[in-house]
Length: 365
Picture 1: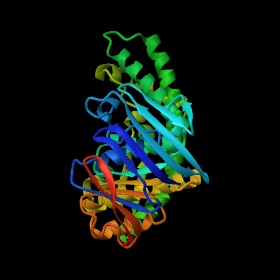
Picture 2: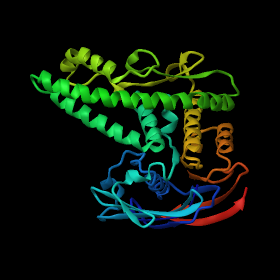
Picture 3: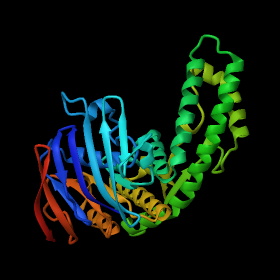
Picture 4: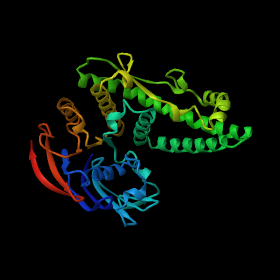
């Protein structure tokens, strides 16, 4: 899969931008504040996921504008396809191949992409929430039904937490929301564990390649802290009942998929505590490369790789490793200085200035 053309109007500082990338590596360079990350973010929205910056629609519109428009032409499943997004302060309206779709989630699995951002490199050293989001975004793109299940779980969680904040929560209502939460929790956890079973050996292989096999990366995901097996709905329901006294004191739900963590270790030592910055970044890259590989195998399409100011955070060796693993992909890469960025690969270089992209150099480096 690859992008053929892209247009943006009134998206952040992209008042009017057109982009004709090549199928290989596309380097977008320029000074800070010129719109490089905005372009990557706009492309990401076509995956059907929300902004990787956590922005809501009001932040995506050019100041003083009520609507933004994004348009994309891409080749997928051996045919040309088109998609457009109209963004207002409250809605995202999708047209795919000329037809209006009920939700942007329709793009999940249609336009697969993997984003490498500075936040990606903190996967190993950040909090559990970042690793849960990594899992949830990857699974939503791989299995659109997962996003639906996650939404149901979060709605039930919000209702249960609202009930727990009451002075005297109704036991009958708690039982209702416990049952709903348990069903969704079991489905989410089962999907997470199946995906991690595919991801783990790939992440270990990538890490070994990046680190010259100096240490062994391991991933551990233990739902409810009770071992790496998938608890059924009845197990979750029993656990929620046991946790009620604690939950009422804390006025929030203290167990479930929203509290789980993916624990990373090197030679059995917690990576977050004992790993060097280089080791943590290598592990994060290994996770993302493994995510991309699983996505490619499931969709039979090569995902788009979106690298937002990542290479500047890596040493030259890890830069070469990352681009070597992404050889043959369509890559969009932002940086301030394009010199030696391609590390020998063919590509196209664009200058970004004032929210506009201009083909600056086209050559094999």
